[in-house]
Amino acid sequence: MPTKREYSAVSDEKPIASSPPEKSPRKKKTDWTPDEEAKFLAIIDEIVKTHLWSMAKEDPDLAARKGGAVRSHWDALFKKLKKS
Image 1 (spheres, rainbow, N blue to C red):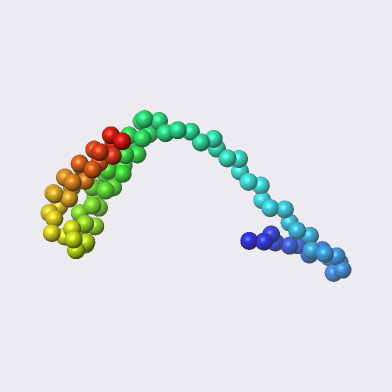
Image 2 (image 1 turned 45 degrees about the vertical axis):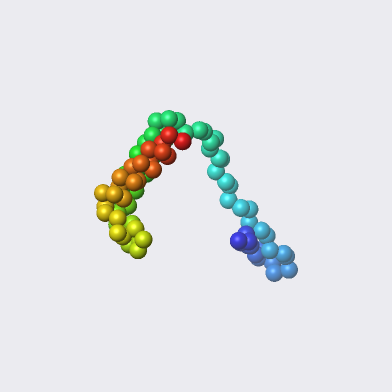
């Protein structure tokens, strides 16, 4: 988006471009700690378990599966994810 221009009082002068706002300094990126990684995976696991069956039963191919089977399958996939 172009910067806004302010016009001077004298109409013969060219518009004065206003300076862009100052950018905030960037934070240094750091690696995830093992504790943060574990908490993140736990949150994702809880979100998936909460909404997994409601989403899976809407899919015509997965609707025949029972809720327990879907959850058990997720648990197996999640264990594989945690190992990698």
